[in-house]
Length: 362
Image 1 (spheres, helix red, strand yellow):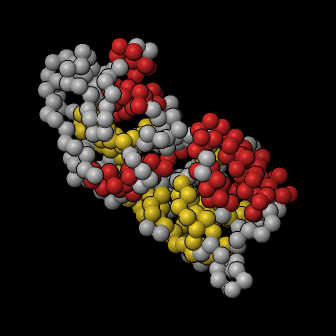
Image 2: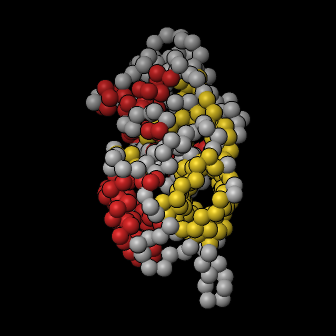
Image 3: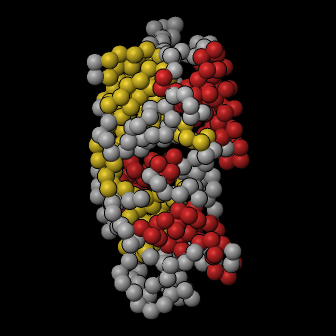
């Protein structure tokens, strides 16, 4: 699906406060359909202005905090400094298709408006190009948005993007790659991915209960599967071999957030350092979980130094293989997630870093 071309512009909108427009129903732009732009006869337009950067906003209308009204407000505000076009996704992986079509669309920036999963799809469509990607927070956690320094509130984030028009400095960051799928900040196998699968199956609870639903899903997955007979994992990376039941791979720090609290596991890994970092949980005994949780939620003790956590730093590539088998001797698969999206089960995966694969502006 190719986003429709923007009509020519002969007027400009002064910078508008999204918060102010939200308080004034009269300032609302008319509803936008897919590919539409705000009307050119807006009362906020004033005379001819300099050429604006072209912005494509890829909107996930099913994301936790996204609504048509909010989308219209955001687009209307951003047209103060950009030539904006908004396209809504219709299904899973649609954002990747739109991103690929945008490669040759002449856009100066493509903005993912949704959660981390939406950004992941956009990144998969634009990886390896010079088209800059940015983010507007619309999900329940918005890990990458916060890590890049973009405010987690959509009003503040919109003001942030408006300010970038005067300080537009794209830069390259690394991506991880597994099974042909790029990830921006994390990839998980085992308990982590089982939790993601459970959460994704109940989007309503994910939206209303947020981190507390994640907590319930983690406890449930642990006792149903990982406290008894989990699938074993063998991890190989550049001469090191580890055994465990869960493996987490990070491209940035923190790993995620519990409300406003960062959850740090592989500390210090950065988007642009050319490497990944990984943590492998040896076992899932209840007595270990009791001592691990305070390290994850607190700041005094490091999760990486827990006796059941094995760390790999400076990783360029690694392989994770199932060590469990069914009654016929066939390897049992383990679940996998990338950037908070469950992507299925495999019995072996290869993971590597792709330095400088994504251009971002934040």
